[in-house]
Image 1: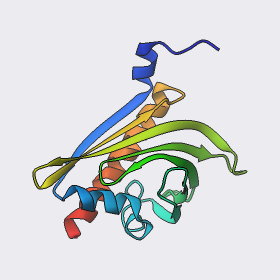
Image 2: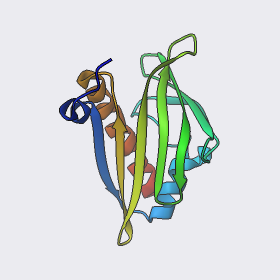
Image 3: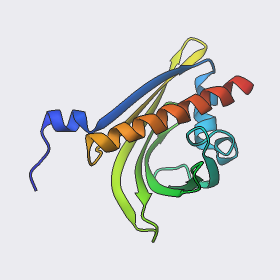
Image 4: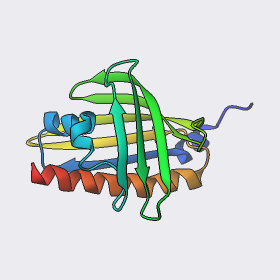
Length: 154
């Protein structure tokens, strides 16, 4: 198999950044603690069915959501780096209905202080296609909107 070119790597990588009006430690906490995740996780209109996580290097997570149309989506991964409250690196793979993983990507989340606020940058690479990357852009954008709304209530 031929290695992807630099341009292909860039095209199949998603980078989103948001600034939240909340301290970095709080943003990291609500991203990593299931009791908080249950209140905001997923795109608008989706229902969180389950979220289990062992947030440590080598620990795993698995979650399931249900779309407004009733379709279930399950994903899982492994934490590769956990540096509270600065950085998370993890694998991410959606699951086929039989539980077998689909294409795996790597997510890197950085939490940077900006005075009293926090800049969260989400980088996810290497999608199978630009179309897949773009579908995830919509989902993650909506999910980050939900996170912002939740943080505003705390």
